[in-house]
Amino acid sequence: MSSKTILHPPEAPLPKTFTRIMGRYPDYAAAVEQLGKAVRDAGPIDEKTAQLIQLAAAASIRSEGALHSHVRRARQAGATTEEIQHTLILLTSTIGLPTVMAALSWMEE
Image (cartoon, rainbow, N blue to C red; front, side, top):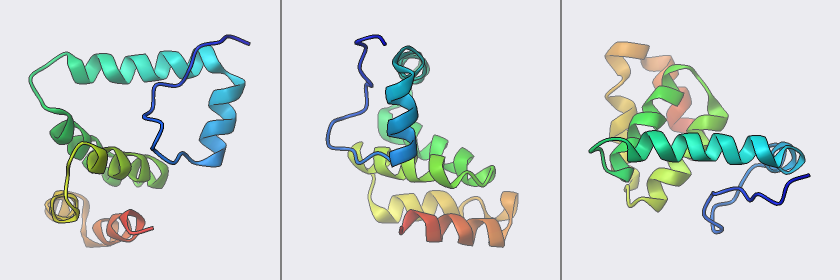
């Protein structure tokens, strides 16, 4: 096993499955984290906005785990609960009310 570390902020609580898999495959974990950082750093969009965009994408594909991750990261980047909720309700005409309601319930968990 490699000694590479996961680049998540230490204060971020991570899901057990994610932690277990990333611990088992540290090179993979480092590559995934580095890719995420590279794409966020590649352009002019600030961290909070990037996390809100990724949160919206997670909601759109009904990925509860990714939504939890990007809610956590958006908050760490300074997003308020109102900004996160607004990001989700903006999706209503695109992904539908039931999917938006599911995402809103996941963000509160």
